[in-house]
Length: 469
Ligand code: HEM
Ligand code: 2DC
Image (tube, rainbow, N blue to C red; front, side, top):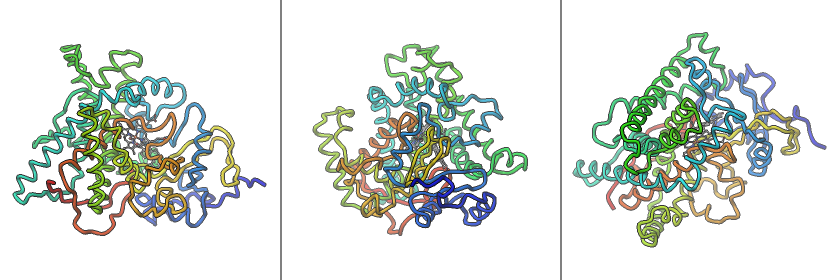
């Protein structure tokens, strides 16, 4: 017989006590480790209520498939109240990230065609490739300046700039110029605001923003300050493009970028366009840069793997004869490396949906409307799901049979990551250029732990040494 919802194991009966013990375990920064422990204690399904946050958690790919099948026509994930409260507070419109229902769908369909459809990759590739090349030139310059034929560095801020330059080049069809020696303070401030925005969000997953606001808490103030900085800089960038569109309507025959294309199309209101472009700009920095940093960290541990990737890249470079879009189709191991990074170091600790029909998972009945979460971090490290999960082994992704609902770093279905195509192209080109020119070495340190700051990031700076080949 199917067991009832209330029989699901877990801690959900005393949400205030659970919040207290969560806080005592430093849960705001350790949610991913606590989640591992919960699956170990309760098995493949557990129910949880911490403060105001109530969910059912699952781990198996087959159960993920059931969850996504019940997502309905307008899939909804956890509404991050901190983000919507800020917009309500400042009277900003929601973009595609926060919209729901028909409003979400109609915006998303228009954006898909300009941002994630396979056909637009050709527009992005030349821009992203140029950014990649500039980054390598910058590293080369640093190596020369060091006079020791190497550069030992915590690359995180360099990668933030690389990621912001990349996403901006695609959104605006032109370069911001962040990879020069003097970085504009405005751009650095924008980068710092995004980090603060993520960091100040996590406590508000469990304690509603209005409570913290009423208490005059630092978290809410930081959060408002961070979003204010994000919105004002994005607004400044977008105004420059509006000016350019008046002065030079044809953009010299070149691809004018996502923003200008949406404006010229006129299918969305200017307010809707601005809201979503702001989200794309903010969503495009910490996500790809952190994933690239983790990838370099993993590659530094395995020089032989770097060689294998280099061989694949060299062969693809040769047979694609200068056609980059073609080249990107010939590097399955590079793509496997990025999947492997997202398996061990996912940006999103879990994927969630409010299910729109009753379902049965692990023989428990779960009613329509429940928030179901797939523990992505825990799934990636489970030995029942991945053989030798502790090993970073990109080739595991080359066998097509072992991938069913296992490669979910960008989410799934119509509500998956809108920036996925930009992110993948940007990261693939980065690795290609990096491996063609440099060797990556570590300082012989042991395993780097991670921290939850809404997204999963390294706990401490990762210091790497880069040498010319
Ligand atoms: C949503 C991951 C990069 C913009 C998401 C989601 C995940 C994710 C897991 C939720 C998907 C779901 O619920 O099914 C990642 C990862 C990235 C990345 C792993 C890089 C390694 C980016 C970039 C951008 C971006 C570069 C912007 C250019 C967005 C937006 C959404 C989203 C706007 C919300 C889409 C919607 O609600 O319709 N991302 N992301 N992401 N991401 Fe990304
Ligand atoms: C955080 O329990 C943990 O891509 C929560 O580019 C559940 C949750 C809900 C939504 C997730 C969030 C987690 C992590 C960060 C994500 C977000 C959806 C989109 C966002 C995954 C897993 C992100 C980083 C976007 C952010 C765009 C924004 C800055 C405008």
